[in-house]
Image (tube, rainbow over all chains, first blue to last red; front, side):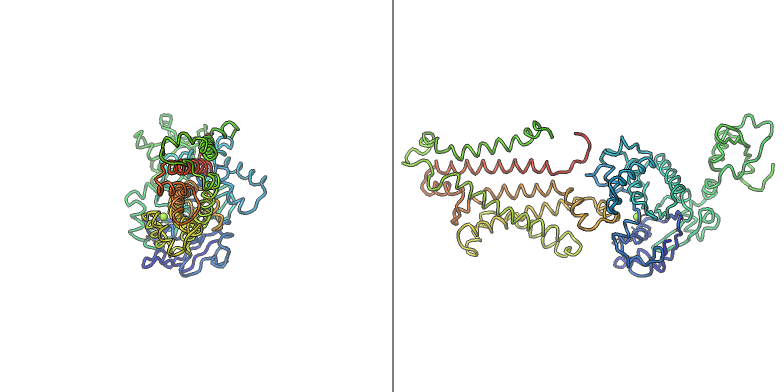
Length: 315
Length: 251
Ligand SMILES: Nc1ncnc2c1ncn2[C@@H]1O[C@H](COP(=O)(O)OP(=O)(O)OP(=O)(O)O)[C@@H](O)[C@H]1O
Ligand SMILES: [Mg+2]
């Protein structure tokens, strides 16, 4: 568990972090959002002491981090940044093995770990282990960056806009992979982004910041339902909020059991785990009011428009 | 690297080294040729000291000076790029760039009133002058490293020394050796002027030739100094390529 109590960081006259109170539980996916310069990166970097906090208490598992050995602390915390920070003079495998080596793992264990991580991030060992960072695409480099952050098997992972510079498709692939990995290995994640859709998609807790202060801290659904003020509502996309909310809900939650009406034969198909936002988009596109719901190849139900709009609607 | 490749790689420095070696031993054999160049003189081959001795002495002076300037230059540049030495960065940067505008002869001229005549003041002057390109290039090399790299190095839990040796030095190596190369090449030429203040160098025949109007002497000194400079320069050029870390997997 990471706990910040009244944590403040001053750079000269700027308050980059202003009396931050934040509690991030084990296994939580916490996403910091806010406009540029609001103190997201500063807050993140204070957790691994790249930036020392000016005042307040910052504890990990109950221990004030300024009391801990700086290097030991950082080896226990994975860190990935937007520009990847991969060492250009080291091949991929050597880059990933950095923290395990610092931790003094045996050569055999290090190699095994590198193989395991490359596989986890869908980078075939034979193809990528010996490449240099300059030979990777942006998305591949980001994957290696994430693998490197995970290498020492840290309990905590800090990520500062790790997918910021990628095209939407690669970005979405990596987001899905991160979610898959998080479900599998259950780290505590602190993630910075200024993309609200990314935050809504990934987070279990969203922390909205503005000018060094925390404005609101809530789950994605709660945030959409009750934004604390106009600033948060604005950040959530104003009028688009309804769509964003639909993006969080799965078709499975609203679909109705078979048999449907006779006209169903003509209806377009959608997958069970897709979002209501996707369902709505398909309906708009095909100008229809119902969809057939599939799980894989088998038809499992149907979804009428009214059910997207209201959960308690019965056709 | 295969033997053949290695030979090709070091071929040019080897070639210049051979030329230098042959010239050092073989110049006296060209007496007839030099008699054409300096007809009026009874003696046309410089013989107060053997060329081998002059070359050895010259190398010793430049080598010692290089050793001093490399260690001092690296140490001071590394110091001012650490958090605890950052206050001295502007001072050192300014001195390093100002020093570059100073002509090498003036450095020697200033050394005499301070240190007297002989080899010692020459070494001092050479190492001071040679310090500047090394400091400057080391600073440039370290500052040219992407700050995000250093941040992630620290963020991963590398100690300051590990960051220095495993990240900063390898990535700056190319530029640093470039500075050493400039420093040594300039000093090979400058050391010759050391003859005017009483050091024994390849400048001796040149000075003596100039004083007596003996063009043959001047030419002999100049040939050897020139060959020494190209040999050293091409050696360091190869060293520069050799220490630069590879950044791709192509062979
Ligand atoms: N090393 C520093 N020295 C001085 N001021 C700094 C430093 N780092 C950050 N700041 C200031 O602190 C404030 C917060 O910066 P921070 O990098 O945390 O913002 P951010 O939320 O990450 O922004 P972005 O989305 O643009 O990355 C800014 O006003 C910035 O100018
Ligand atoms: Mg930032």
